[in-house]
Amino acid sequence: MPREKVKRGAGWNFDNSYARLPSTLFSRVNPTPVRSPALAVLNDSLAVVLGLVPEELQEGEGLAALAGNAIPQGAMPLAQAYAGHQFGYFTMLGDGRAILLGEQMTPSGERVDIQLKGSGTTPYSRRGDGRASLGPMLRECIISEAMYALGIPSTRSLAVVSTGESVWREMEMPGAILTRVADSHLRVGTFQYVNGLGNLEDLRVLAEYTLKRHFPDVEEDGDRYLSLLKEVIKRQAVLIAKWQLVGFVHGVMNTDNMALSGETIDYGPCAFMDAYNPATVFSSIDAEGRYAYGNQPRIATWNLTRFAETLLPLLHADPQTAVKLAEEALSEFPEQSRSHWMAGMRSKLGIFNEEGEDEALIERLLKLMHRYRADYTNTFRELMGNDSAGSALHGTSEFQQWHESWQARLVRQAESRSSSQLLMRKSNPALIPRNHRVEEVLAAAVQQGDYRLMHEFLKALSDPYAHTPEQARYATPPDASAPPYRTFCGT
Image (tube, helix red, strand yellow):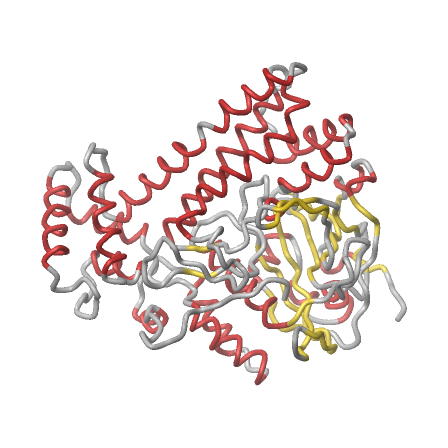
């Protein structure tokens, strides 16, 4: 199939700073063209923010670019090299089915990666086919856009294109390509890869690039690389706290899936918790619960420690001093994350100020939710005054006692009840992408080619704090008799 350069009619405005890094960090490779591309989903509002013209992306050369059948003008496609601890075991990796087209310079001056996921084999494919199936790509589109609307830093989905070709994942499935937008795809695993090669100068170049791209305010003099570690720690503390506050379970917190920008990346086996349980696991391969909901802050610490290890040669010439500096920085993460989580939980309960007993009040509620298998999202909605007759907590003496303690706590602050209600409304989503709803939407799209449910769902998820009557039908938990929800990697 002939490959052509796409004209600038779609609004592409590429720079390629990553391609100017040492060649050990990537391999130049073009996407593999597909037989019969067709647009499944286009995120028009995101396209406009990026400086793109939605109409130009729906057909012709614009669609060809989203399918990997044409290279946009100014793009320099490449697959990134990285490593990673996968379930605790170190492996040299890389983009096995994703290709970075380049960095789009937006009208507001932002620099964002444009990546095609499912665009064919690369030097890092490790016997994989380099392709992706339609269902998981649509699923990433739903979850990533929901995360963005929830106010959680996340990669985003510009488009999903069906390929007209099949992929095999235990059975034949329709193929697709996702266009992913990210602040960058720099990962803990990127540093692990370079550190593993033992090239100190390349490590320094990568560190400087990361500082310039994500932390430009770090001063030129001083301990720049220690500052890099501390800034990454700060962003991860915010991110993990936000995950915990909405009941999000990432499912595969390998070091190659921790983005240094502080964005959520890789939506393979992720899902949202229904009934509150810290041991919640969705991934079919996480038999030991390494990445369970309640373990996410601890795993983030573990991953950040691996990042700190890569920076040791840059932190100080004396190894012992370098280790001490790293340990001191890492020691701040648990408290930072806990502090952000506590602030968020206070907001979810309509609490403006701080009291020493707040943590005990919050933990009491969570223990009750766990004991009675109360729905995490809906419990907080019900505390806002919504009907609680169907709640697992309704009518229990323990909850009544807790409720009285909570009401007494609200009385002790200066803010009015209406102010507390408004704070809770802004802090508790009316809906999340419920797993059974996601499956309904995907079944209609993949099996029947009907995208109406998906568009309606995406619209409802785009404003999760609106609390409109139309959103109520998406707030219903799955039937109690439903089997445990399972998600899968590598799809």
